[in-house]
Amino acid sequence: MIYLHKQLHFFIANNFITNHMPQSLETLNSRFGLTNTLFFANHAAGLPVAEIQTPLARAHVALHGAHVLAWQPAGQQPVIWVSQAARYEPGQAVRGGVPVCWPWFGARDGLPAHGFVRTRLWHMRETSLDADGQVRLRLGISDDASTRALWNHAFDLELIVTVGQTLTMALVTRNTGTQAFTLTDALHTYFGVADIAQTTVRGLEGCTYLDKVQNFAECSQTGVVSFSAETDRVYVNTSAECVIDDRAGQRQIHVAKQGSTSTVVWNPWSEREKSIADMAAGEHRRMLCVETCNAGPDKITLAAQGIHTLTARISVA
Image 1: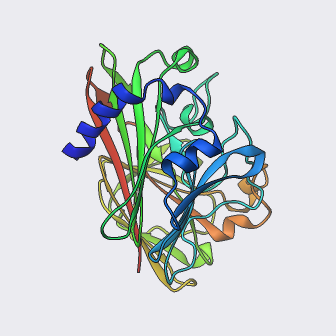
Image 2: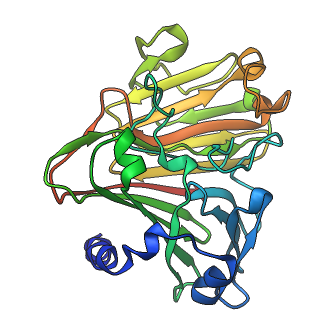
C-alpha cells in the first residue's frame, strides 16, 4: 500500500495535464497496449475499452467510469454480470459490471445518483504485466470546474485493477485540497448467478442492516442471506468476507475487502425490475449485487492531503 501511495503522489504531478485531455484510441494502444495481452477498442458510442486476455483470465475495463465490464478466470464461467439492455452512452451509467460510486453512495436531491465519476471518462495512467502473469491497470480522474460545481472539493481518484485468477480492485482517494472532506463510496459489483432462488450469501450472519425495502428499518441478519423477493440492504459495521453460494452454478464466489465497513446486498426481483429501463425482463434471476462499500452511517472523513483505499478482492471456487 505504501508503494501505491508513493506512486499516486508522483503521477498526480506528472499527469495533471494528460488527465484533463481526451486519450485517442491510437494513443491508448501505443502508450498502454501490451502485446498479445491488452489492447484498446472502441465499443458502443465510441467509448474506449481495455480488452485483456491472458492464460489466467479475460477481462474488459471501460475508461467510461473506470468500469470493469467483464472478468472470467480461466476454467470458469463469467463472474461479472452486465444486462442485455445496458446502455453504452456518454453520461450514462452501465447497468452491470462494477460501477464506481463516489463521492457519495445512493441518491441525493438534485445531484447524480451514486456520485459523478461513474458517468465520466477516466484516463489510463499505467498498464503492466507482472511476473505472475497478472495485468495491472491504473485509471485516474481528478477535480475540475464541472466536478466542483457538484462537489466543491479538490481530489485525485484512482482505480487500480489487477486481473488474474483473482480480480482485485483498489479505489484510492486522495484529498488534494486544504480542507477535510467526508465521503461514502462503493465498488458496486454485479455478479452473475445461475438462479437467484438457489443462491445464498454467507458472512453477514448476526450483522445489523438497514432495509431499504422497509423504509430503512434497522434489522438483524439471522442465518445466511437468501432471496425470494426484492432485497436491498446496507449491512453496517462489517468488514467480513462474503461468500456467494451459487448452488445452481456449482460454484462459490468469495468477496474479500479492506477499507470497507459496509456491504450492500441487492436484487430487484420481478416487480422492481419492471421499472428499470436498462434491465431486460427476467434478468433478476441471473444476477446479484454484493457491494464493497462505505455507505449509510459508515462514512470516511479524509484530512487534507489524506489518502483512503477501498479494496475488493474477488475469487472463485
